[in-house]
Length: 468
Image 1 (tube, rainbow, N blue to C red):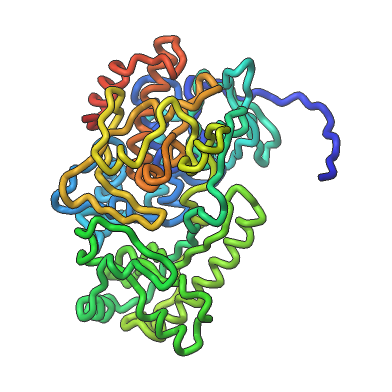
Image 2 (image 1 turned 180 degrees about the vertical axis):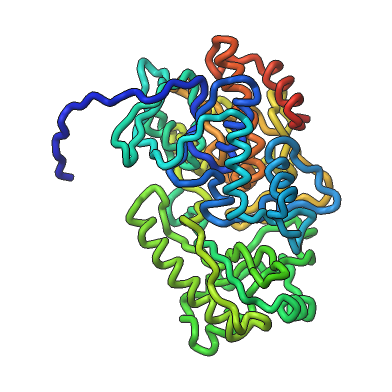
């Protein structure tokens, strides 16, 4: 590849902070709030114009759609997101669970309020382009924006980018799932103008179940107890559209779930478009995915208008601001025999396993719990029996870089554990643990790898988390 030489430059340092959180999805937002509430000067850096990640930028509004009667759920800041949205009327009951779909547009404001209440320094519209690392210690990041190139210095950094961007660029060894094995990306969208009564009558007349998630080109592993449960699935209209020629036969991947329907006729967070073979760390792939996803979404809307009762007069309300990405990159060991089972995971001090998420793993350094909910790589296990697993702090500790924590969907583990911990509520649980640990690390003058886990757990309990 040809290169050019750039002139040396002096980059202004615009800000100093105790804890810098990069990325404001559920994991990053929870981390920043937890850090600030634990008494650390905290800064939250976000490349877009709102906080919230998948909730606000992608439009995945089903924050806890896994919750059922016997679910033992997470507690803490993640649940607070749902409660705060409900308190201002920015949530709608979920059709498939004991939870509420959060209004992603209104949650932009909810997130603003949470950030301001917590005393966090907000930094929107700045993109991290490089970490500042000296002698294996991360010192901050370089950002670029309309203001140019700037430096932010921090005593501790939390990588909540979702793609382990900071860990990767700080020198950690990174593995990406082979593109052909990555979970598909999605273009999320919502519609309005739906006749709610006609739509629900049709759903009740011929309801879908989770067994319908098995399509012509993929199989689904369940525990069996999920198969007969109601699922807000849309499949038949697209089968009819393909048969009629409205949708090409090769797009039989247009199928999936609707999220919630309001009295005003909004049919929200439609998860119908699945884009396989897309590497979201490649901007060319992202460009193709955004445009192809919108094209397929418009075909899906045509099919719904023609073949789904209640949608005859419906139209597009909005697309998500960006693609929904389920997995890309995390750092990992070089040993190829180790790489095989480790999909998209940092090589953490402890890497979670399928055994941990399937068999109620317990850890001395637990920083939270998450229900036995696994969704990804052709696995769907719902938490309907009260089973849950604990989340180890060590899974957020990358090797090779000091003063850095990695949270959100980039924590250490194998493929099945990724299908569990990538979910938004779990990201918030890990994020809260990371934020508290970073704050205590600064306050006690030790590296994040050496922080007293008992102090972290005590503070998490004070913040309303459940760790056992």
